[in-house]
Length: 168
Image (cartoon, rainbow, N blue to C red; front, side, top):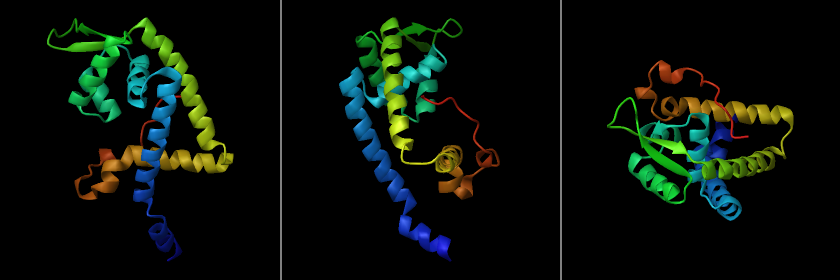
């Protein structure tokens, strides 16, 4: 079939991996130069802007990062005055992470950079193609486990993804 032949030619998984690495290397260079943060640090600020005062475990889950990696990242961000740690009033064993005013200021600059990234990524494509790209990326994000590990997929994993807020 044409579709199977096309899929073999595309080597989609490999191309996604290469594109992801290239894109994030370029984005890291730009965000470091423009706002002094890595894309991972900026992502922490963005997650906190959606819901401030989260434990590191929740932030790590949202960003698909390990807690230990994120702890070091948050340490560096706290040293710069971008975030702070506070003991949770509900559970004193939990430490929540909060945006500081400097973090909010850098976040605003970072959102402008993200808007630039999104415009540059989508510029070569017409509206119809952009919708297909959005559908494809939403499908991947919402079904990654079911796609890669179909034998372990639950019914919930096969559900369409809930729309999330974009980093405009």
